[in-house]
Image 1 (cartoon, rainbow, N blue to C red):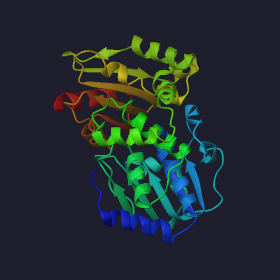
Image 2 (cartoon, rainbow, N blue to C red):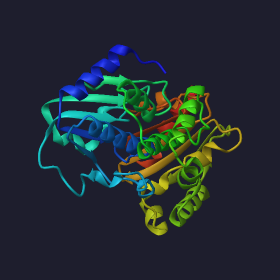
Image 3 (cartoon, rainbow, N blue to C red):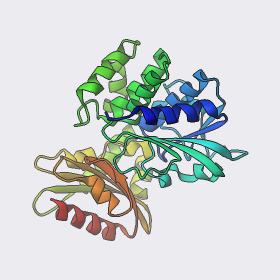
Length: 325
């Protein structure tokens, strides 16, 4: 993982020279986003700083075991009463991923941008971006070490959570020797690795199973069998009783089909917008596919929100993937 002393020094000065921070992660937060928010909150507490943690929407229910996850304010329920001059954005590949939280950024706000997405556009006043890190919590783990802070069990659990989810249970290509050494160190703090794997990677809700069944019933393949995709719309969500977090992991099913190079999930948002999730076996850089339409992510996992009908979006994405195969 490539970082340099100057970057850490800039971050250290930003944290120690200011106070009253707003901490925000990306919309529809995943395990790494939630965990990174909480780790930054803990870090600021250690430094004696005041801060507020927010997200545009709710935190996934299955993340409620993380200490202080209930302190991450859902802005759709509880708006803030003021703007903030010192912002810390975590796991946001670009500024748009901040969502409505940006409404509370002061006009002269200074932003610390901490991330690991290769497509991050460096939108911060200070940027700590490590593209070869497996997760944003890995970047924060090194920052904690740099600041000579001592981890506790709950913070170690949060870091392990982000690492576990963003590496797919240590299965993805980002699982380096450094990642495994870090996981081993975190387990020494009493983190219950097997229990977290069961909760985060194996358990499925009944609505999630029903949603998956409907999605797979409509599974489609390209002529050469290299691309596979499923679609989900509002009717699917209503009939199954599923919520947004029940979409987690569904895109892996078309990707896991033998000989498939790219798996896709198209989630219809409304009549003229579709969210696309992409997973690659490695031959296709899906981050580049997503970037072509204004999205981003990683080589093997990326996403984008696109304007247009479902049929039009499917055609555009599939054709772009074909061109890169």
